[in-house]
Length: 263
Image (cartoon, rainbow, N blue to C red):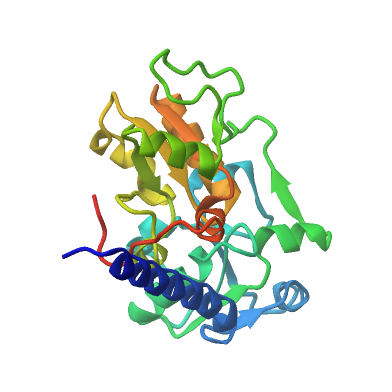
């Protein structure tokens, strides 16, 4: 039998699991080993420079990337073409993006023996003034400012606050809650009834989303939420972004669920 006490305990356990996971992500820089931007720059000037691998979606790579990098999106790691002893340095967008760490673990499981990650990712590399290639003609992955939501939509803007969402849900309004984070983060703690559709797979899995659904997207990184919303809106779907993502949901005292992927 469900009781308020049991519900509260489950919420506390879920929140604790999520916080432990986030702490683990912060502390796990030593395994796999990490390089600073200065260290990578020095290696690239050596006689045997490492292969710098951008694990973000291909569209992000096209828009901006480390000048020496090659693209291998996170969802295509199984196609890694290099010898198992190749020196690899992986990066994603910046602090808060766990893709490079998870990709390094994935490649290590495939037998790669020299895989490192770049501390601070592309953002830190750019801030330090190291070479970044940009394509001004690349399609931006940001929500269209003039997107028109259907008259039946619960929200008139792309950004939605936790209080607004909870208020509508208490009224019985149903939403397709989309978690755009990697599966490992989803399992550690997610919004109740959320569906795991990682950003890296979203374009290829649009058919799994009901066309008449009102979608609320969240992530731990705001940029990833915006990219997911842009993909959904470009496909003609009514999509909003939960402001502050999972962190603000948790800080607002709302419950998290843990466990297997809900699709």
